[in-house]
Length: 251
Ligand SMILES: Nc1ncnc2c1ncn2[C@@H]1O[C@H](COP(=O)(O)OP(=O)(O)OP(=O)(O)O)[C@@H](O)[C@H]1O
Image (cartoon, rainbow, N blue to C red; front, side, top):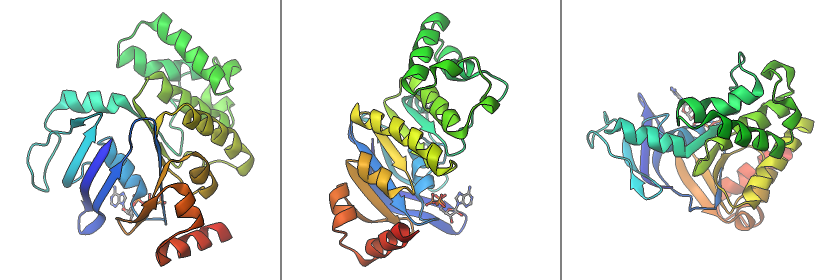
């Protein structure tokens, strides 16, 4: 995925002000920055959940086509949007599992109804993914019967079941108690070790340092500094990043 010169405003509020981002295949990119710096907005613009007003988005070599070049632009091709969204699975802070479906049904739902894949094949894949994230025994449970960490792992299995080209994580551990965060962190680390393409918004600097190949530090809608995690976390170049890290690490 490649983004060039992305701008996004909500009314008079300029949230993204010319952001570039590259997430080559097999790489993990972490987005860090203080609250309100535009991290989630950038992630949501990547998969067109939010529509940016300016800039280019290219996914798997395919540029998004727009109706016009102006601020009122919309994606021009609905089929393209569906295809691109299918290729970019998103994991949210609040899990967003469907409460009226079992865990297995949650994981199977999109591949069966959206991709129209064979239910028996999807079920086998879903069960394998639930086992992979360590909740193979919870297939027939309801979401409310699971801990937050188990629900988030189910949400990750659901994203993986779409066999996406890239995974987008929006603060996947923020809603969890510290002891439950670790089980989700382990799953994300395992996925990073498999060289999956991932973009990860996180407040957890240790997670960002452990799993990412590249880190973007956003400040007021701009990329203030970027680089490999060693540089970002051990040898920050800008005062803003130094201040951000010392404030974050002090918490
Ligand atoms: N739908 C929206 N309508 C209006 N303003 C919005 C909307 N979504 C986000 N914003 C504003 O855009 C700015 C950036 O928000 P965003 O959620 O992208 O920041 P963030 O860096 O992810 O913050 P956090 O770490 O707190 O989640 C904030 O000022 C926020 O209030």
